[in-house]
Amino acid sequence: MALRSPAAEADSSGIDAPLRHAPGPSTVRRRPGAVPPAPLAPADDGTWSADPYAYALRTGRGPLFLRRADGWLLLLEVERWCAEADAVDLEVLRRCEGAVLDVGCGPGRLVVALGARGLPVLGIDVSEAAVARTVALGGQALRRSAFEPLPAEGRWGTALLLDGNVGIGGDPRTLLDRMAQLLAPGGLLIAETVPDPDVDERVRVHVTDARGAAGSPFPWARLGTPALLRHARRAGWHAADQWTAGGRCFVALRSRSTHNTAVTGTRRPKK
Image 1 (cartoon, rainbow, N blue to C red):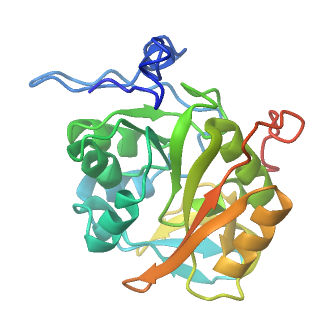
Image 2 (image 1 turned 180 degrees about the vertical axis):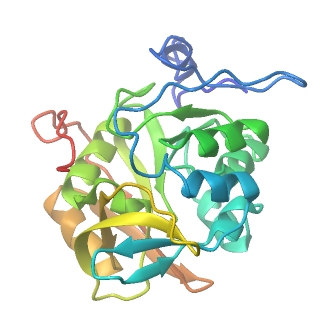
């Protein structure tokens, strides 16, 4: 399945051209019996790329938690992530436009579901286990951070930040600026927020399991819908929709109609 830009008929380069020639790992389509090449390690290899997260993805089960320094635990829905896309997921995917970038794709259920619907889609994740599982299911994925160079920057029709990935980097404004840089002007960002509308926090967390095994600490953010809308407004996004389904909350945002390079430069999240 070749990735094509929304204007592929007018632009013969399309999205698939930079994807084929991107530095580091290329998108991967697994041939029967083929062994996927080892993905390139991202710049930050101490977060989701470390065990016990990798072990949970390989086995498809938890329990797995995000743990704050004060001992607070957030149960991660590993079994749901490793299952097929459910009805709530499919409602989100029906809203996608053009070529889709799934940021923090995890084990690939959304990448695979979008591919089955005929949409061009690429997943990115810093976890080798996540990329390997996505590829094994027939999806296209890169082992790469959202803040590293990516194929087709500025031409994606939709970006997804689901399953808590609006927290990537621990700095919502920086992440929103980066999403605007990746999307085509006027592109669509669909983000999942936490059900508690009052949440707006930046924390350091690590992944742990029931045995107490722990990955390295990393910055994270948790946002309710009002908080995300506030950050988005300040960053120049326009609210397109918001909804709840199956106990989960979502926001759809539109990027500016033109790119602002002064805002969407190469800023990385603070560590």
